[in-house]
Image (cartoon, rainbow, N blue to C red; front, side):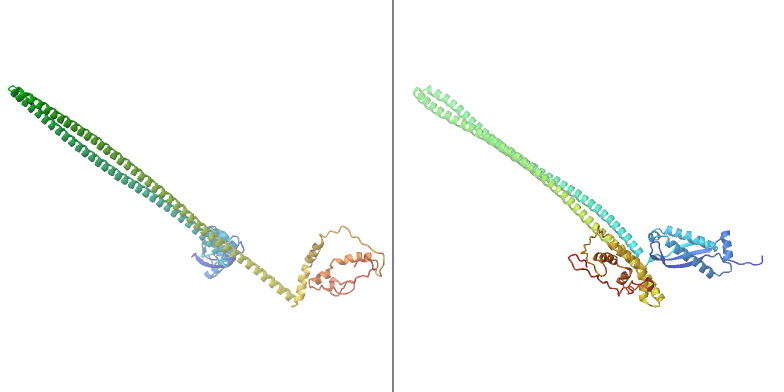
Length: 486
């Protein structure tokens, strides 16, 4: 071994402040990045490092690698659109690695890592894309929030409806229980009143029966006493016929009177009993009627309560349904309006970015033309008129083509010329007309004069030796007549 040297395998970090790199869409972007490279340990690549980097300082190696990375990074950016660069960073980094690493291997370096710091552009195209994506994400989030709020409102409405139904059912059951209890109470009261009335009637009947029995017992005792008296009278009559006859007559009268009184008392007792029974039947009928009326009224009240509860339940359901539909419409309208606003703003931003990029391109074209015109004037020794003449000569073919285009579709079937036969010093009128036809088409000098350009000498002059500006058309004299052509 005659000589030896060392190369450090320590990785080097190289900052690449790439600016104004032209993308595939001709939009310039800034791609600041950081590359980490090092001496490769692969034998073949290591030989390249030994040949090209040995005895170079770290700064020299970094400068060499930086130049290679700058060029390959610009090449990579030029082959991709901004959307591909911004949205798919992984593919962008792979493209950078594929383009940069082979070039670094040629000098013995190995690409370890690539870190893209940020991606920006002067026309804010990337920012507009981000705003559009953010607007779309916000719209999606708002739609999701509205959907969840809708589900929450529906759940809340269903819970409220269920609560209203349960409350109405419980209130209806309670009202039904109250009505049933009231009906039972009324029936019980009516039954108690009927029982009391029946008891009173039975007591009256019992009293009447007892009175009738007492009257009958009294009548029986009276008759027994009368019989005893008869026996005594008859015993006394045995003593005296006259007294007996008189006593017998008195006794018969008295007995008839007492019997009539007893029959009248019995009839009165029977009438009282019949009246008491009739009153009892009336009281029973009234009690039964009142009980049925109370029962029917209770049923009517229960049906009314059930009808009102059902009506309230249906009203509550309809109100909840209408409120939900109203809320749905409001949320959908707000979401649609916000979506249209966001879309319009994103569209406007995209159009603005497009027109700004177009304006920048047009400005560059005009700047290039201005530079070219400036060089053209300089080449003509500052003679602007000569420069404009050269430019006009380049366009003269286009002007002539436009002149020809203006009359090429003019169709003339035939031309009839009437001549009186009178000659003129320059020939007949017909000959003058035919010779004038060639002068109708504008010659090259006239076209140049209309454009304000003076043609150079080598293009020739008019036949009479005058310049186009001095040439005047002289009308040929013709014979006087009705068919003269001027």
